[in-house]
Length: 289
Image 1 (cartoon, one colour):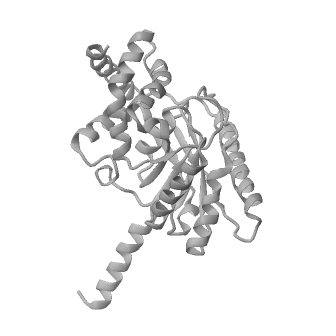
Image 2 (cartoon, one colour; image 1 turned 135 degrees about the vertical axis):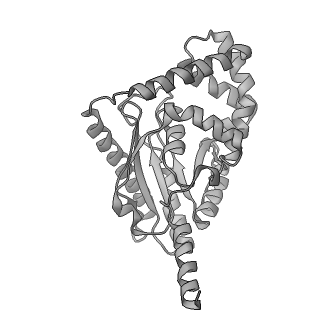
Image 3 (cartoon, one colour; image 1 turned 180 degrees about the vertical axis):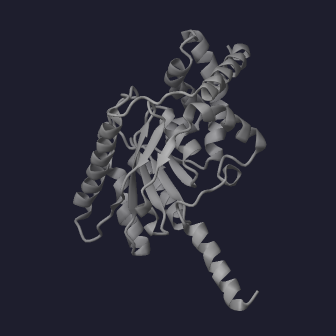
């Protein structure tokens, strides 16, 4: 191979590595390294996998992006991780990073996922799986967030900037609503995440791109909209609010479009898989409760 070809090949490889939307195999992504974890995700796949709608214009730049999505309880983060094959660091509530707090936070989700369990069984099960949940989150390299303590946000922003500089995307769920998320509504956002645009411009001299994402459990679909770019010439406070409000509006518009769609029809093969997974889940829960 000539020097020119080697240089072109190296350049092509670098471009692929920098492409924030390049497809990454599961075993190459954080949290999927071990065979046991990949089996767990295969079991969860029928529940959380979604079709992904990706505008071609998102590929116009090789810079990392910040995905902004509605939470949709546990379905939001799980479906994004299982359905969008890109490397993304997730902002995660700091309460889920310790075993004691994780057990408390898991209870509400377990009540919905396992309605056949009693209050006592939910409490015991959440305590037993809390340790596993913390280990899984650690494997994913999540970035802890504590909105109630401003001093902790400094660490969140620092870790986020390190990830962006390394070419990694971020995934943030900034909704302010209570845990009982509606199937169709999107609550207002905490706007602080948008300050990443100011920090990124200071560090790189480039405008950070924020990507609105609407996660729809009813239709098992994830819509990715057109980017909202940080404007470095605007007043930082006003620009923070503009970015946050614009992203929220775009996600609401995508939600309105999806409300007019027919509910996804479950194919017989998938229905069989879901029944089988439900059976496995029940068998696994029996010794724990």
